Image 1: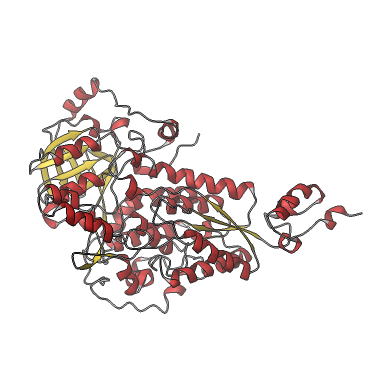
Image 2: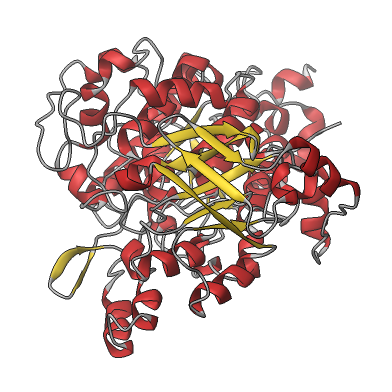
Length: 565
């Protein structure tokens, strides 16, 4: 008897046939039956629906409901959905303490966890449901790495709050309230009331922080359906997009379209252009390079700098502007943004719709308003992010120039050096920082942190005191997407690697020139060499997870990817 043909349930070209086909797979089939599958299910493609549900993170608490919608779409299109979850860490909850060492490190853990479940169980395709900051890039990295048909449907932005009569209030402003309380601008009771009203729904924080920057980037890269970048988390449209994503991944499977066909160098360059046009978080620099690395595509800081000079900042979004993400959604969303900058894009790239970007944008007609500007009359003439180089950052540094006042594009000040964020916070709260100071926060890089913490608590204290035209901040750490002001991060090489930032002393002169893209430490090479003779890096306490991360992570200038040998 031909036993192999007797137990052939599906086309052997499907990856999942490894689980279903053949006499020897009796145990695997029994396990599948135990999950509720029947014999007809064994004949269909298996689709991983991988979410990141968490009761702790508002950007993720609704993802199980979205996953239900995805599963409906997969079933409608003839597939068998199987759900799983990965971890989710909220950057907002981690701000200002040691917990912030973990989110960036979780990005690679998330990518690894998706790889493990998909490869171990031989799924044919996958739909990924991230919500916030590092979960979205982690899942995009996994999609590029695994290169099986994939669609990404993020959780989407929450609605803005209403604080003090402002119906467009976002948590990016709330972060500055502690500084305002300390400065006597508002009362503690006012702040308490604002805390209760600022975040009224589930979803990613309403401003253009890293979470919504990545949410929109998913659409720009063509890895999510049109609309997923800005549709509110609580809208019925996002549920419909989730269901459509389930159907779409089945079409990709039939057509043989995989992420590496979508995540080409041209698509990644479009991603950079989209970040510049929207004024997205500087964290996108790290994440785009990491996604490119997984896709086998070259992308470096010089690409960001070149596109920054070509693509203007056209979106009036908080924290660099006035409006929350839902306002951009009402003004046409990412399709309108991309149509506005179409001349700057590579429109021949493929998307998860099965269409090219040019075909997707063919019927889009932007309607410029106060939220979405034009190329001819942008919010600012250059892109939202600038890349700086100089004696303090030989391998580069980044700044969200869209959030810097023109008066601070050139600034020279005296260094005040801190070896941790907590030390800097105490100095600012204690009124010890004078006008004309450049705060230097070091040993917060990917390796030295470890984990490259965001310095949002420090920047918020500075901004809350109205000192954004009096002092600047430079760090080998990074910044929240909620950050604005003269704050320069990702300084490379970092302090723990012996970069020049490790050798800065109080009183040294530092010159920032965003127009010229320079960041200079006015200390002679001879003096720096003398200082380095006795230098020893600070090693901060760390547990096993961060120890492993620190031993593998590379420079921020390469995306803080992990070194695999």
